[in-house]
Length: 212
Image (cartoon, rainbow, N blue to C red; front, side, top):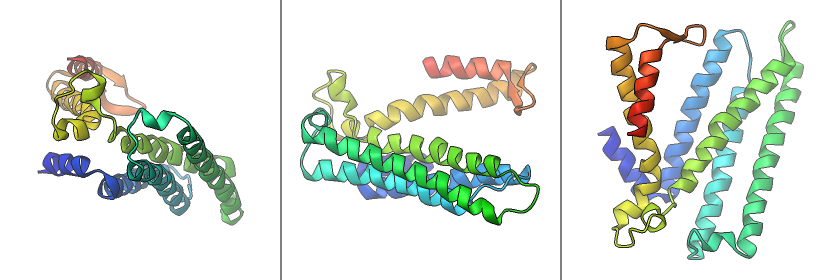
């Protein structure tokens, strides 16, 4: 059911898909910041959420402008559209600078013994690692993979979902394979201090499944 719902949102695209990605970003950031708080760090959670969603919104807004103008992926790389992409990049950089400034200002309210640098750095890293990287999911939704690979007769389902599914399905297969192989055959710990449950056997299985 979850996979079907995901494919449906990818097919729809637009603001419904943006909403899904934004909710996903908030959840992922919440888990990241919770893990940091469990270790005694104090990232600015609200500011991180706000900046991540702002980056996603700026990306989606640009995509909608292109769609209203009837521009294809190749058309977006010419003329004034390059300037539009530059404007979005400047806006994203501005959001990142605001996240840096906001976290530093928030440290005036921090308790004694807390590191302002660590709290600020972890907040901004979450915005980049989650918000900025997920913004590429919004762009990949509009990558017409069949056309790029020469399948000009592909239907609308393949054209709308190909770019996303080409990335998501191999990762999902790799993670699933790594879980079962690691659980059944895993003996050698890969990085016990970072992720105690990961094994070398599971990692190798993940790589093979993803490539296949």
